[in-house]
Image 1: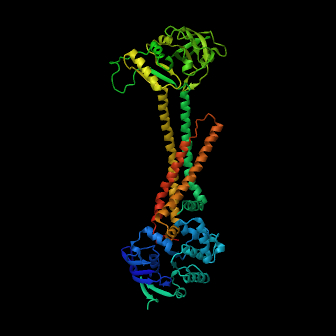
Image 2: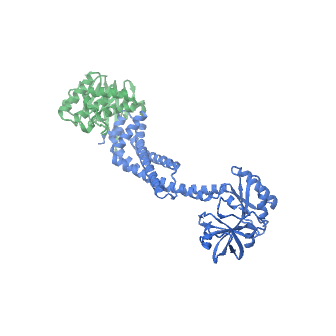
Image 3: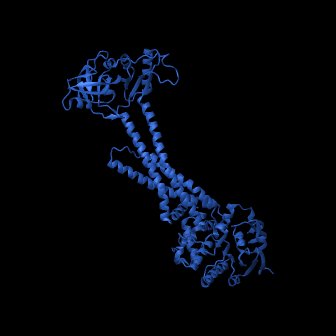
Length: 225
Length: 399
């Protein structure tokens, strides 16, 4: 599903070039459960942004489902993000003035899906994360764990194949963090490819496959024999 | 994105900052109210002026001696101009559609009567004057249809002159002296008030032939031609020109239709209304700056939301539209509030001061609202573009 060949991502900071990703090659088959670990500045977030089509590599090839993403224009990238990829962020990123249901609806609103269909699909997604009863609550009326569950519902409502989670438990206590990981694993069990960026070894260790990054390089890949 | 969803999104985010949105909209509202009020004053002034001018009737063509020349020809050397005579006026009565052609001449002189004296405007006119100027006689009758060349020495008083000289007593049949000549009063006109500072009631009306003699003039000042209602003005003007130029051997006179005068006056007043409207628009611009400021702040505050929208598949142009939509909505709300406020003020003023020259103009109100929306659009472009061009990765990092 995901294929990276010699991918680099360089930033120019002042007059210095920083290699956020340094010749990374990687294959992730569909349905995999992968954790990406490493200290801050190791390039794991950059990798996630590139995989999520929010950022483009400076060099190398990224194929998503066999399609070379470097040939895609902004509109095609947005379309791919909309239909193939779901994002979960460390700080949830819910829109404060919308209730849980409306937050989950947001991707479908942007995609122009009619309200009736939107409604039932959002309720379905909220049911999957166990939040059906809180659909009309605003984010500030929800606990951290509940907010992250709303965010997961939003990430899966378009039925993507790939879920990217950037430190999804970083702002949560260990109990709600555990619940979030359980939900992600359950979704993975239903066939969703899940990538989790974390620096918590306990969480990273649960993944079927673990990638270790340091200084923009893939240091260790547990899936490679 | 469906249009109603876009509208809903824009409305919800505008309403999420009630006070801030209300204050921003207020800026535009004040601007629109200013435009509405100022243009109402302009339109009111226009209506007032036009009413002043049309009270004499609109089917009038004025003929004056001389030509409005645009060449710098020394008029003393090549002056072949012939005077407008009483016979000219008589001849013009035979032009098709013409109902009356009235000679007119004006001057100032003292009028003595009942032991009092007053200096007033002397109008030398024809017996058709009440008909031509829709001016009614209050007492007695107007000048009789005598031979225009040797009319009897009758005079008709303006209402103010009558009051000054005779008080409440009937002046009919009394003798007055106009510039030393004896006249008999046969009538008193109804009060017509002042027109542009000229008191029509402080006047005396005598036959034109006698006024020519009194002021020792050869030429009439004007011949006022009244034509039938609904007659083709151009044909009437052509007829007048044909008859007069045949008599004078050339065009040495100027024909002005009432319509032309009204057109010129109207266009001047249009410019005035437009100018005061433009003045009001300055406050609209200030309101636009307010919207620009708030939208800039809003984009900064909602950076993560923009990043999120982009992450879940929003195109740059969708983000741009959402923010421009908010900007337009703020302006439109302010505009409607301003229209209501302005309209209320106009209503209140006309209610308590019925004579005030204020006239609510829907066209200008609509233009003001349109301008407000346009200002909202323009004010929103730069912040919305900034939002659209944000790098989603950077935007999501913002807290």
